[in-house]
Length: 268
Image 1 (spheres, rainbow, N blue to C red):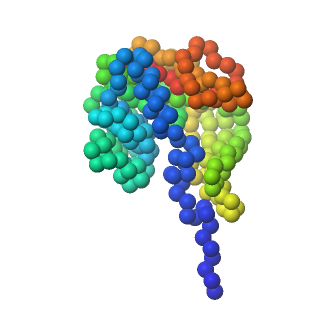
Image 2 (image 1 turned 90 degrees about the horizontal axis):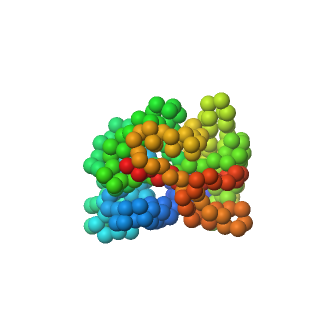
Image 3 (image 1 turned 120 degrees about the vertical axis):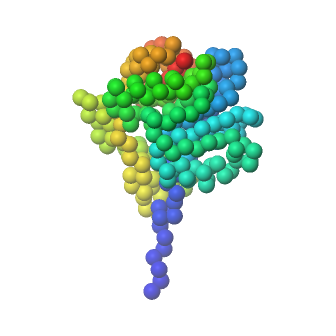
């Protein structure tokens, strides 16, 4: 009896799918470098990527500048190991030596001071209490050089508090973002990522997030309380068709969009 033909979902790598659909490390690093140069009038040299996953941004950091150093910190050994095999291994040997990957809790890790710490893809939203997030921000501040900056991202808008599904087509698969549950009293939000394939197979709940939906005023207030001198929101521009154009500029008010993405840059 002939064997069952393998489904596309069975052969797919969920981390590669995530990197394709969600994570643009080049754009992140470009924004961080440009912003640092405008604020400090020099090139940033050292970088720490908290909640780093496969450390794609850390690898891009050293790839994009000769002599730059990067650290990736994540609590999950499996994803760090995946990053070593699939991201770090792609760097030239000399650049590879300038990346350090650490399996650790960002609330406890100790590293040499760096010019930039980044917590991206809303990863720090895993901290649901004010006390824990403030503790994290204080630890980040101590991890920065005198001119260092801390870069976060956030999303919001009236669609952010809805229970919904959004599907985006990519070559060879569809990315499905599902906001499964939102609790207005606590601000908790549960989100899942699914991947669907042309043969009808699916990786359901490939990634699951149990977060608190933090607002920009809350984040800015906590950063200032943690001792940062300034916390500036960088708002994404409009592409003219109702979407973002990938360009972020300082903004005091923002717009009441259905969905928005912004960076918050805190200066030590």
